[in-house]
Image 1 (cartoon, rainbow, N blue to C red):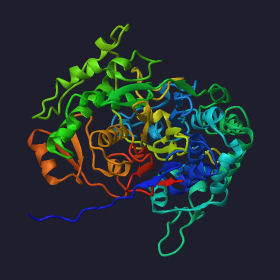
Image 2 (image 1 turned 90 degrees about the horizontal axis):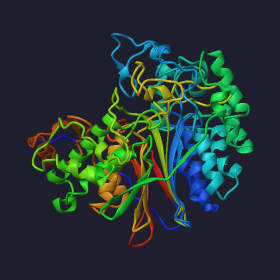
Image 3 (image 1 turned 45 degrees about the horizontal axis):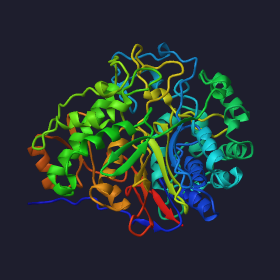
Image 4 (image 1 turned 120 degrees about the vertical axis):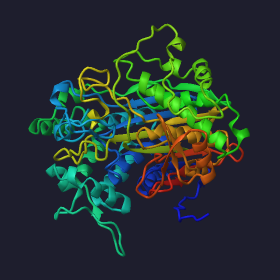
Length: 572
């Protein structure tokens, strides 16, 4: 049988004893590792990495973005979720966004297109940034090193610049048209000629210097994150918004707070998987794992057609239910506990045929498993989509553990850079339907429903792993399958991440062509509607995860990162 050449790309697993940082850019990972070498905590390392990655990966996250974090404190065993999500400005109204009757779909969530793409790009799109406040609150509670020291690597990278690699150059060039709509964005990310920065091609790559951002980070280092919400930076954001028809005001910024939650928890084969139940991707991952837990996956064998079939069927049900029932509980009744309950999982498991695919399986009904709540079935709209995000995983020598996901929404968020600050603002409205009348419609004070899924896994109550990913809706399928690889198939972290994955949230079963051909053909033979996806250096069909784990036998720390980008793990 004739064959064709295929990508064979992988990364080695990082191993260490005293600490580990995994991030999407090597310079950012090094910022976190530096904090660990100085005796800092996992929180110090995570905060340093998060600010640094916003400089060297400015299209994914930063001061103008949002974040979600799960943390476990080794000394007390306390676990806490930090919710640094955004709310829409109080002045926003759905009628501000003119839906085009024949414009098709747009944005990462596939909503109907609007005039000037206003719900995805530009001055009407941003919500209040949540990342700086979350990082400040986490450091206030659990940091060891001085706040100023933790921000120094990010300040230096912004002030002195860094040499762009192929990934950064490609990402900036890909958003050429959007960023050139805004003079400050064009000035910040492009050369004076208007061309994007060039990576190394036989010589040094261009330096990306962000002087205004360096000044903003210095203000945050000296005055704390409060300067973004009440001080000089807040004033600059509000003034630029007023000049350009934007909606965020000083009052919107001043009202922002990081929400704190006790993590949700499920048991999966004796391991505890924990994450934020509200407004995140965790409930969908938890539901899929609960369903899968009733099958002997290990007995079927890694990459057997039978095992991949069950993994896909459980995932499909978790994501179909998400689109039907989950949302912001402040806006609508949500059966969160019912959706992740073992009783509901048993019902959904009963709809799976181990011998045949069910591509058109619809949503179940978790409401009977939601104690004390009357069932409500509100009008829903839309689908989920891909996003541009970053993830950081950290363990320190004391075995404090952090899983942190942050995002601007789409690439470069709104495309807007606030004059005098270097801050690229998120495009929060991209998460909402521009058509009025549904619970997912744009509206004042509404909070985003994110696919971010930072999780921590415990083994016998002790820390085992932290995992998360960028990649929009595919974050959930990636985190789910990595947990399955770690627990069912006893993989190390790099192998668990490098393994090919599937994604299904409806009739289609998207599958990496890195799976053996006989597995793909076998799935097709039992009724899966197969969509083959070839992975490459610029694709993101199955998200871009990273993670850290504690080897249960040796006690060593082991880390894995997405093999197709410059993502890096550094041990100390």
